[in-house]
Image (tube, rainbow, N blue to C red):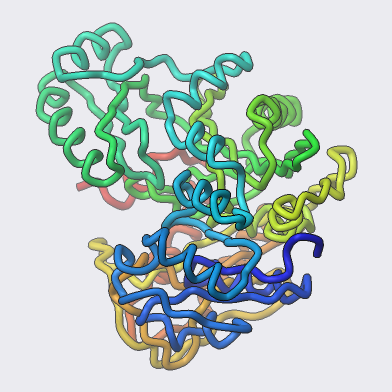
Length: 450
């Protein structure tokens, strides 16, 4: 591929495996940056070359920009692929790549920075004529927060401007609670994101989380690959995602997807990304939330119904190639569901369960895809996110996809560590889920009432 013949993969786990597979298909040499804990991992076995960038804790390895740049330059890599998480949405990594003559497989540092701040992103969406949630600008103290909340009307959501991944958000139902929460949350998000800026938005108790997959290139072309419904969440963390969303009309789908493309074109978006929206089910109205400037964990459901390798298109865009498909050529067929399998207890505590996998027997069969970095004997380290696999099923319609997922979860056998498979089996059989009678708070309301 022009401009890119060798990529440094600055990530681990299943997304590293996923990127490695596309690199192999494209004939691109893959160098894997690993911590001490991942030197014998499945991605390390698959890579053309492995370079250790530091000790096991992420702060000493995967989160060290200077180590990644040195590793890329030292291995004569042309580009860095950040995957998701870690530094994937850090404009400093994108800028460091530009400064050192490396290609960042993602949008420009300026775009990453713009979209990384939710307040800036909201202004851009508003400029495009896209509905944004009634809310505030930066809130300086709890007194100002109280004034804004009373004007908007309770309940409200307090958010971190620099937050992401479901972190830095709190629902507030009364003024006393707001006083108690504001200063604590500001301190927490400053520690987590380096920026304590908070703002307030109206909260919709009966909402769905809908996101649109976009692809852009350096020539001003932007298309969408439909939407995903990511409403099954626990503590704002997605657990089950599917595509398409079954509760919206074709006209509504066209409107929300076109809105995502409009925002992407406004910022001259030139990579894969996701524009996220909240759907107020009571009013049947959607509102802009944010833009994620990276590959998403849940991208496989879109790949399954579109037939598009999103990682490949992301790499091709970074190599300055034009999009190979027009909007008119996008065909979305069937229904796909993804369950995130975590190494966590299913007793309701969801405590991480690192340790050695004794037996790993994933399901197989028509319409079943498993993205994972695990196998028999794999030692799950305690330093990272607990995601160990993504189970994706595809059917001609939602019911077939659900039936296949139920069957696949029943036959998925893992011993040696606890996993969330038993919990997912229960969720997939719940009548509300089968009928798609859910919202973003459904899971917690039904399974975690206390």
